[in-house]
Image (cartoon, rainbow, N blue to C red):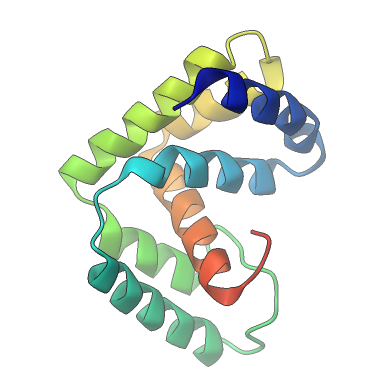
Length: 135
């Protein structure tokens, strides 16, 4: 991760954590998860199944939540030990850059301390990206 670029992004995220902690968690996990090794074909298939779950759950345009069935299913499907280590490393790298940003640091600490939350946040971002949301 390029520290200066991420620093200004994290500074901007400080207020989002206060205003919308879920959106901030999704953003942090999404950025931290960029280095995960997920093949394009596997990711497409997993996202496709998650989109079907979104559609089966009612209005596909409704906002996603961290506990939505599609989000949790995608998280479970993608998580494994190697990817978990990579996600934690990405979150840790962001935490080093955000050391003096109290709200972002607290959000990162929460993600680092709760594997399920971190994966759900990442899955929510991946699914939002697939659905064309700002996520």
